[in-house]
Length: 245
Ligand code: SF4
Image (tube, rainbow, N blue to C red; front, top):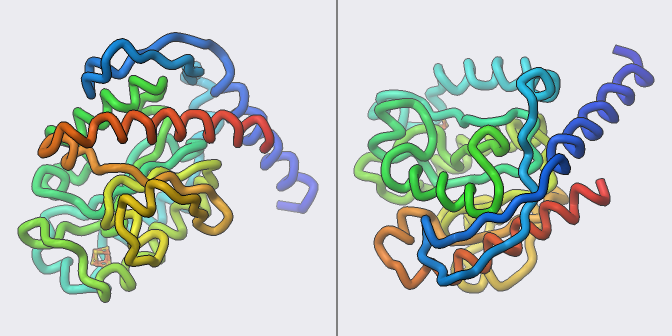
């Protein structure tokens, strides 16, 4: 492809992203998922037509990357996995959510964020006007660590090339790191989630918002209020970034 054709394709992709994310304005609330009392937020939904979605969700590079992950043996986790969990969602998404690693259900199904935590994530997304079809979701690791232990440094090192390639291909305006382990490994820091939530971060020039993992919300309802604050920030930053892109 020559430079001019390539630039036209990039502009078209960005135009369509903007179109998808500015079609309707609706009210959503957070009560269903997180019990925030009577708090509401104005958000923009992205009710793309199927044809438009197809036009913005190409990505043969992601297909070949997924094939590479399926056969990957770069770390010891390949020995215990049932399935690799590559990622799922809109391959032209303007926002990417990143968790730490597949759990038991994800390993069995090969899909990220299923089970109770996944259902809660769906409700959180809905509260800020997104659905799984609008976003892309992936993990730091593509294979489940036995017993859901934290990822080892060498496993993260072996696997991070895949996530880096996914993010390069999707080219989102915003990243949401779900939980301490995801945020620390993505941002290469040992800072606590509290510190990470309260400060500004970038991954290869893309703004990162760190928040609690949905599984942590299930264990500790006290995290619901700060998560709602993070989600409002996320939505605002997302919409502002789209305006200026
Ligand atoms: S965790 Fe990543 S690096 Fe390790 S085997 Fe799975 S895909 Fe390969």
